[in-house]
Image (cartoon, rainbow, N blue to C red; front, side):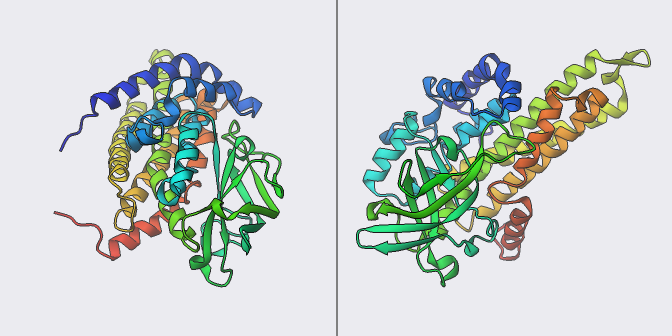
Length: 387
């Protein structure tokens, strides 16, 4: 059992850490208050080859896998959660293609994302269907050598800049989850419209919007995988992203604690730095303990995904990593704000931004309540083995 990162992974960590501190951190506050997609950060990641970390070499990537992407996301999230999400979005909309796409789809779209020529979005959630995926109402009707899509998707991250959108729709509306299929809709397709950006509490730099499909006609070849396999494709794709979401929480918590410690060493009360007060030391000790626990859960989950461990027998472990790390991030952002007192609550202070951004992590890629159901199911079905 090796608890050390490989030399390649350490190189990724050190490179991204330096890049995040020198290039991303100075932009983080502006990205938040402007609510504008940070195109300069995307281009920076492209120039540094970070958009292809998770892709096999045959598709233009570095072949370093999910663990490398998690390490990069963690480092960026220490200073800017919005920018970290750019890296995550190299995986979520491409995994359906990698899992079930044709050879030509993989060669064209995966290579395009790895090289920074294309960006994607993942459209599953709808106004009346979030955690209950089987309840989606978007339809896809076969029409000769095409499919006609109709429906509305909601809270779709990155749709405003996407060159393609992975859309899940019912090809057999009365079949529940067994009637869902997966499609790739290209930017500019007639009948595809992107709604206005949502006004959010946090994560303002990466817009979420509605995606509206009105008689949107796409070629038969743009179906991803077999007809009616969409539910399986969606679930496995989401499973592979859970450690990456966990890495966002891990990095955010580390960044918040670093900031709180620096402040606690500087701020004096009762004649000494507040870092010397036992009550705050206990808080910081508890935080770093939870951070280290989250790190190994996240890294282990990434290790599993890199070994194709995203089927039903492994998803409880992925859910544990996601739920624990993101719950920890929310608690850490709150505690670190508390260490700063009133200062931490002020607009423009890093702890205030992290506090707002952290909450999103408990909601995306499956709410943490859904993950607890997955974990409990695994426990009751005997998936977990102890000793």
